[in-house]
Image (cartoon, rainbow, N blue to C red):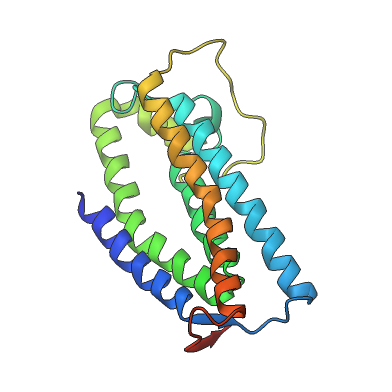
Length: 196
């Protein structure tokens, strides 16, 4: 297991424990509560679909060719960008701005060094072609333009299937958050903290 994955899981476990012993302050029938639920579901859906879209273009090609089509034509790190949306969506699924901010912080703490490291490797591998790519495509915030699409591409079924399963797990967070909320409402789980 890489250091990044270890720290992501360790810090994420701390957030999960916090979620299990806390409740949010918003009334269940409030506009804020509904807004958080809708925002969470949208972000988690976009994260899952975006990760799958990105995987379709990169599977089996990583470090072999410089991928600049699809989501990679509007940002250099779409898998990480969509994962970031998933981290925020996970926090909002627990109807908590606090957990969303904690997860966003964990994402940047654990993933940003990897993003920079991977870009250095790509520069070493592809040289001027990568430099030219970086001049026109931002690292993390997508350009608001139509993505460039190739006519056809080869996809590794094994790797893509794995990516599809991982993406589907992102959506499970929404259900788990609501099971957690139900357990608090019915006093199955203790409420030690009340968070925003």
